Amino acid sequence: AVLRMLDITSGTVEFEGEDITQRSRAGMRPVRRRMQMVYQDPYGSLNPRMKVSDIVGEPLVVHGLADDREKYRARVAELLKMVGLLPDMAERYPHEFSGGQRQRIAVARAIVLEPDFVVLDEPTSALDPRSTEAIEELILRLKTHRTIVVVTHNLDQARRVADWVSCLCVRDGVGEVAESGCCSDLFENPQVGEVAAFFRSASRYAASVEGPVTPGATLE
Image (cartoon, rainbow, N blue to C red):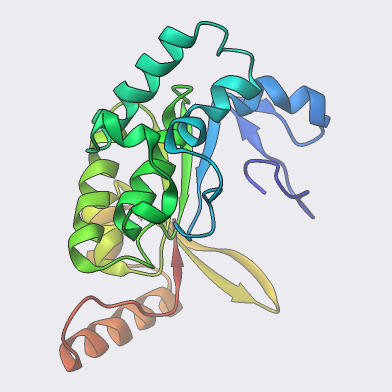
């Protein structure tokens, strides 16, 4: 909904001070060059019939920025190196990559237009710990040049990558922000009772199991 992929049911969406809630599909086109998305499933979000060069470069084609093929290929190679892949991987297909590598390809596609705002929806939920660590390191690098929103159920991940955290909950069947704040302040001293109770519950769960904790709350 933030990216206007779905219509919102209430409230407004503002981007750099402008209300974009009522913009038409055509009116959203120039805005979408600056707002991009990385989806949760690295296996389902890439077209298996397309080479990596075409997947990463597709936004350039959609927005009419691919006329110069030499610059196109150079840009794709630049993005692959940026996300930790080799430029010659551009000629491969998605099935030739691991889940972590596929998610890096998805990130490269999302930033090829140099957007100001990127949403990553549960970007590591389908990945092994090593791939998760690599994607988190990539997120930390990316957020120095743009606004990054990471939707995650993983509290440890939120601590590692976030500066500002919004804890969402469902009240009377409607999702809403229960509490927001600086990451360190919110985790150390939550002010809302249900948020504090959830953090305590998550801590007890973490103490009882081994490995990364993925409790049931959504954080931005």
